[in-house]
Length: 115
Image (cartoon, rainbow, N blue to C red; front, side, top):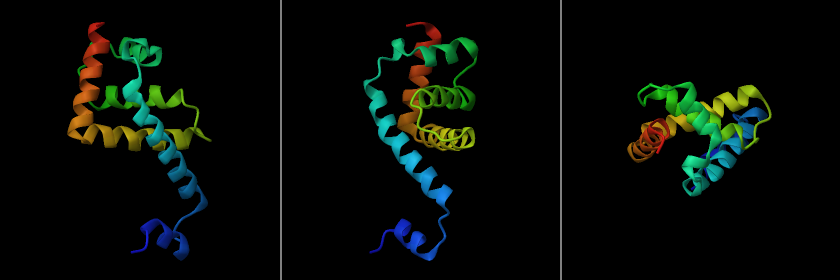
């Protein structure tokens, strides 16, 4: 069975920016997998998000901003529009997955409770 991405590339349905976005997304996902090893209390970027959004219950905005803060530090993006698009996709995937959602919510509680 042929890979759908290879099929799309052969048919010309992929534009060069699609390929770049896909490469960036794949790099982000690889690096995001390493986040489990991150010491949550030591992540200044996420702590800044918690300070900025203090008092806000966990919902879409804190989830997106935590992802943006984490990805911004990785410096993988060629443009702000690429960063925005990838951040939205990664945050949505994490937010929609029950296990990831629970982890992000627990992380948010930890950040906002100062523990």
